[in-house]
Image 1 (cartoon, rainbow, N blue to C red):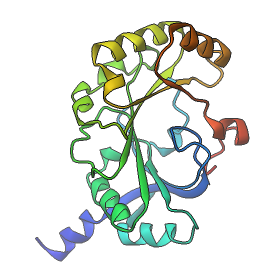
Image 2: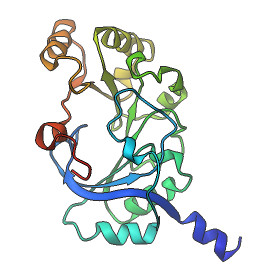
Image 3: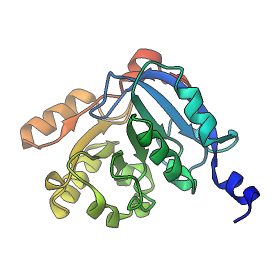
Image 4: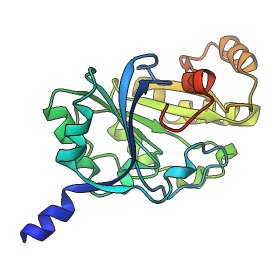
Length: 221
């Protein structure tokens, strides 16, 4: 392998690197460095990061690591777009773990997660019918989840809620990972979703997207 090829393989296209509070998952509220990779093969109807579909800046993994070291936190989230759409994202995840960071990745569930470093917490979506991308779910990924990983359902309406319950039962998800139910911002009334979960006694974690309430989803927040 030539040195030129090695240089290409050690870089990623980055939309932004920023420091904020984690807005969701079991890490909610923790000061976190976010590394947002550019590009996504999905087009969910509620997507709030369409600005990451294209553009970005090519960066060497070593430069990415240097940038995040300026922040006084050990928690790092690799997100997108869809971070696994870039071939070298696995190299970044491994490097971050080797550096001693507590690393999570936010992924759409449409791309194979089997090669993700076992030290990384995988926060994986299962796309509901309301997303418009239900057909892209890669259910084979479920076998690669562990109890430290998390499965997220973003719910647009009551139909999405009932559909998600069926998926949880079909794949015995409660035995495989933590489950997150998140209402679409300005969609499902959060109190209604909370009532449904309590009424059905579901073993799931209800979550808001904290950053949207604090900063109205400003890029880089």
